[in-house]
Every structure is written in C-alpha cells, then in structure tokens.
Image 1 (cartoon, rainbow, N blue to C red):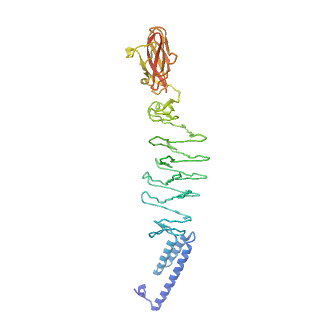
Image 2 (image 1 turned 90 degrees about the vertical axis):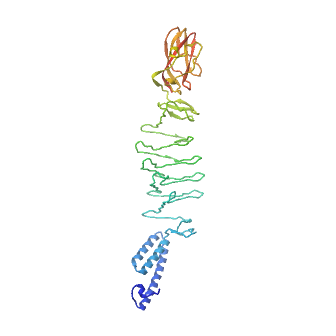
Image 3 (image 1 turned 60 degrees about the horizontal axis):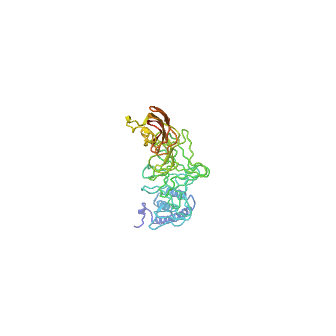
Length: 442
C-alpha cells in the first residue's frame, strides 16, 4: 500500500510529507542508539531495574504510532537482555556464562548464578503436577557439596511449608541421600542457635520426623555433638511426649537405642518419675517370644522381672524381693481320702508333684508361703518340702512324735518352673497332710 498523507490520518503537502519521513528515520536511529545503551547497562547489578525505568520513561514520552514502536522495541530489548527466563527453541541449551537461562533445557555454567532481592522472593519455585518439585537441588560431585544451601543472617536459610496435610507424604522440606557410601539427606549446622528446628502447631503432627527405609540399617534421625547435646527434645503441652520412639519391625528391634562410649547410655529425670514402664496385661514374666539377657518387664501385678538367661521365652527372675499375698488364703492340697485325696504319705516315700497354681500362685514364682498341717499321724516322723523334681534337703518342715495328733507349721519352699512342690516323709510312721497358700515370691 502506498504511503500517502491520508494514511496517517491527516492532510499534508508533499514537502511536509518528505520532512516527516526524514524525521521518522532520525527517530529510528535514536532508538537504535538507546537500545545499545540499555544493552550495555545490563552488565551492572541493577540493570534490570534501570531497563524497567527506561521503558517507563519511553512509554510516558510518546503515545502516537511512532512512539509505540519505540516502546515495543525497548521492551523487547529489556526483557531479553535482562535475562528473563525464555522458552528455548528445540535443541537450545545455555552452556556459557552470561547466557540467559533456557526453560525446558539443561543449563551449564562455571560461575555462581545469583538472584538478589531486597523486598520479595529471590527465587520462587512452584509446581502443580503431582510428584514434582517446585525447586530441586542436586549435588553430583564426588568431593561432596550441597544440593541446596540456604544461608541467613537474620531469618531462615531454608524455609519449607506444605498445606497438603497428611496426604501423599507431603512435606515442607524433604532431604534424601541416595549415596552408597553414606551421606546426609538434610544437614543443619549452627554456631550459636539451632542447626535444625522443627515446629508443628497441628494435632498429631511432627516437628521433625526421621525415617530409615534401608535394608542394611541406618538412622531415621541421628544427632551428634562434641561438647553438647546430640538431640534435644522438649514439650510444653499437657500429656505430650518430647520424644516418641517406636519399632514396627516384623523381626524385632529397638524403639529407642541409646549408647555411650564413656558415659551413660540413657539418663532420665522427671518431676513425677524418671521412667515409666507400661505393665503387661497378665501376671508373671513373658511366656512367649524370644528374649535377651538384660530385658526388664513389668507384669499386671506390678512385679518387675529381669531376664537372666536368653531364650524362648528365656529365664526370668523377679527384681523385687517382695511377698505377694494370696487373699484370702487358698487350699492347694489335701491328702485325706475323705476329701478325695490319695491317702496318707508313708515313711520313706515321696508324693507326686503338687501344683500350687490352682491356689493363686503363678507358675513362674520362685517360692511360696504356705501352711503345712499334718493330721491322722501314726508313730513318729517328719515331712520335708522341696521344689518338684529338685534335690531334697536334709531338713524337715514339720515333726510329730505320736499317733493321732494334728500339728501345723509355716514353710517357704522353693517351686519348680511349673510352680509345684513335692513332700517327702521320714521317720517310722506316716500321715495325711494339707497345704494352704498364703502368698508367693515372684
């Protein structure tokens, strides 16, 4: 289409028309010079702001068609020259210092890329795709470095936040170590304050959670200190826990494993009690499972047990020398035929094992407090009690010197692993006997 005065929207003479063309060429030359100046300014740290300022000035100066051309030209130079992220053509890649970062492509440089802001976010990453990362930092060096390093003089070096409560394993900050030689997923270091601080205000949430999914064994959370505290936990909430440790392994492990080379593995102190062991639902020591020497167990009666020999279920001993009463007392045995017993025990014989468990004595008990009564005696003689299957001591628990007497005496015989005793009769006569249980020693 020919250039005519009418195309510009106003009438002019031929001489005036040629003068306008010359003026337009002059303005285009000035625009090129301004573009060169703006490109040179990009070498300074505040070049982006200066370019924006120049664009503002240009846009305010002209609003006619030629002015708009100048604004568009300056804007294109400002955006490209200021390093705004741009989509790259196929196969493009930033491979040299000073090049613009290309979206969707790998970018390589040998110098530090720095983003500085005095008001907003220096770097903001966001993704709406599941399983992706807004910002991902990876260190693939062989000498060890940082995938993401956050530093702050007055605020937070790295701050992570998630609003995906309990869904899909969401996390404000995730640190992962995939090395074979052992590394650190997240490392916090401080010379004055806290290397890592975890805070939660949500119910049933975690300030810091550590999880080890390795097959060879590792640490969910590991705290190391040369002069202070490796891991410090505190809670100010009622009925809360500063530290919760739980083992959910199928084979069996440790909810909390603490050790010390030269000091104390665990030091406990509490305003109410230093340590609370949760009692079992049954009386006596464990009867199932494989146990190790040194384990401590509390049964439903509040009796403390210690494993003194490993095995299934192992050998356990009460840690408290305490008589547990059987109330009211229970009759465990009566030899009288009139009471469905086997009859009198004769001199030189020993009874079959007599279990005391039916009288309230746990089979695991070490000894029992009983009352031994002889009735329907003949001649003279004595009775001796001992743990069933064990060695008979050379002592007596009760004696008689004539026929037809009734005598009683307390005794504390040892018990077999099944909670049973046996009775041996000596002398020249025989007797019926009765065993009543008053208590036991776990």
